[in-house]
Image: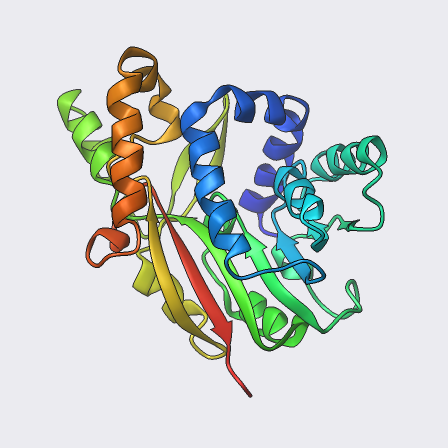
Length: 271
């Protein structure tokens, strides 16, 4: 495992116990999560089986389990997996959620026997922690049913809010930091991790050998990113109107290509 991924693993472990509390307290983040849930439920149904990458503390897995969808939740951080196990015991979800302490590079037949998942999901930029997707693309191709769906929420390289915010602060370096192809040290709570940013077309091209793009949605074009929550606290009514505008335009070109995140839906090719 590369050094920066070891640091990422340690950083996520350190925030695992406070992760849920921070998530619940941020209305922008909760809105974003609900948008992603609507997309999930438009493609997956009760009885489906999903492989989740970078599952975190299992917030998404627990939601999907409540809809009768089975989830094999994986994460690089053992502390995050422990938090998922707590949710499983507390809510009697062992029938619906299984866990595995695996990095992206460990999604293979040695660790995961199943080869017939209906879908794969990855939420909120977990896939921004790596820059080479060749091995993962091959692994997901082997784990998904032909025609299976892969839905990823990825941090976009072009975020107008971030550019505008940092230019107002006369901080040009941070305003355009997402365009750095070598990645940057991004904040994770009070820790830093290596992050890489992608356009939707660039991200799709990394999986082109095995997947075709079905649909792209923006996530947070007019709405400020979660780390600018102070704007919501000062002008909640205005930000909620931005959320409604985002909901209306999120799937329409060219609006669906820019924003804090994009949600890309890809289908495994019939090969």
